[in-house]
Image (cartoon, helix red, strand yellow):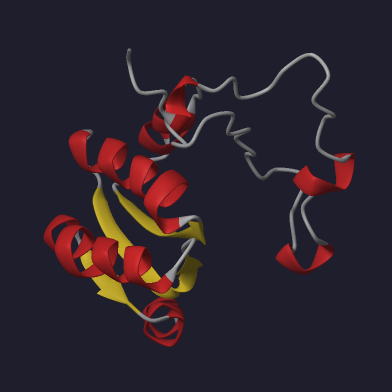
Length: 129
């Protein structure tokens, strides 16, 4: 008999309620402008199934600043794809959170430091000033 793995469980079922609409709204503090490009991420990684690479390349953007929720899921998936596509990466450690501290630190110490630069929010903002 095969061992059932968490990945074998169905993700969303027809009776799974959808996320509330406000879960995907941008907060006013972000200062979104009508000309901003918004990429709707539907998987863990921001590149999979989106036009993110095309939007970045057509603007001549070669460096991506990464932060976000779920260090070992969405952030890591996006980072791996971006790295494979040849983008330069800056990881903002204190603007990223994981499911637990150990997993978060593992990604930053053992993976991200080999893919790009790890910086704090303060260092990142200062670089743009």
